[in-house]
Length: 100
Image 1: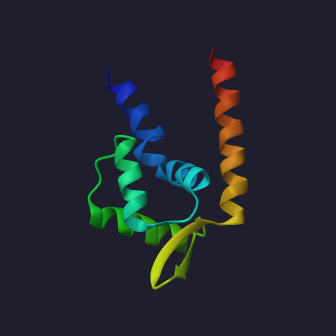
Image 2: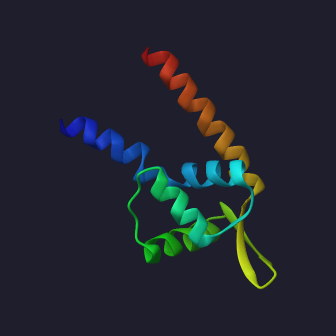
């Protein structure tokens, strides 16, 4: 059913920032490849190149911050993204309650 496919695309690929923030909240700061690997565990079959493009875009959008530790670039969640993540989770909970 196309409606369900659109739904899956919207809550999945359309909102990868939610997954990235969740990963970093659970695991702490990570380097880019580790984030990409974690996204793949969620079932997102993204290329490594697209993964790094996604992370750079998230930095430019203020979702992530880059920090360099021991010559390696690590990603952390910005304060604004933390607040928006909490709001999004609350919105999802409310939506599920309203629909069920």
